[in-house]
Length: 294
Image (cartoon, rainbow, N blue to C red; front, side, top):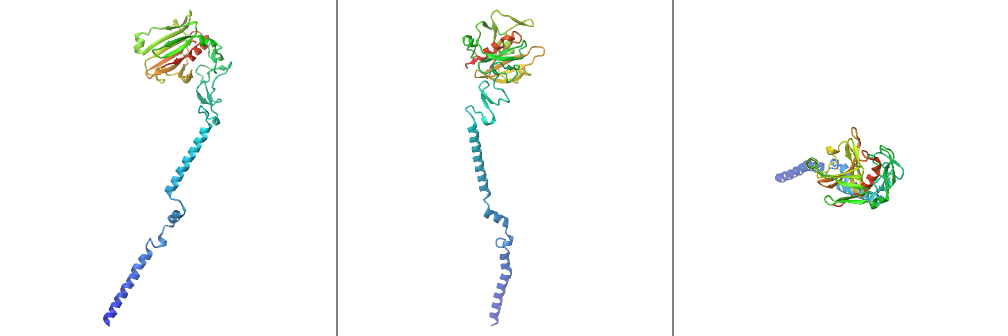
């Protein structure tokens, strides 16, 4: 009888201890106890989209927006790529898009232009610059002489270029000294001059047109081009770099450079200010006929 009582007592004690110790632990456990839960995270997970999904949606929306913008801009471009809604139009003379109120495409007939360094001094098609003053700093664009088509043609197969010049002119090939070949890498020297005319500047002969070819790389930032105003120009479909240097001791210098190859370039010098400023329009006409075949 006593043994049965002890067994029941022990069983009751075990159950009691289990209830007192284990049950509170289970009830207060973090995974079970609602008071220990992070309700902010739970609400966000239930009512908001996963972060990765949000990022994916944002990326897709951005791509679609970019595509719409590209289509919008693309539809506004003309055949030359100029955006009309932004005020850009195609300039044939300069071969680029520009805004007329920022940069003139060309100077029309009988309208005055500025100095050769003026970026807006390109005459419209069929016109050439004709100086109206002795200094040649101001002039007008006048109708081009149609006789250009009948001019003589100079061709150089070694360097791959050609140009036209008036029938009453002569192109003289000068001898290049060994010093010029070695020190200046000069390969060719041509002078253009009206036949029977002689011009002198400070005791030395000069020609309205001088053409030289150099067998070296063209670097427009080199020392020989320092201090000059530079401006890229498309002439007869070829990209030249125009240089204009204001003179101090000597008159202003004005010339055009075209890169022939990686190791050679041609320099076309306008000497009309030291010879005959009235020949400036002839120089421009000659320059407009240059072609490069290599």
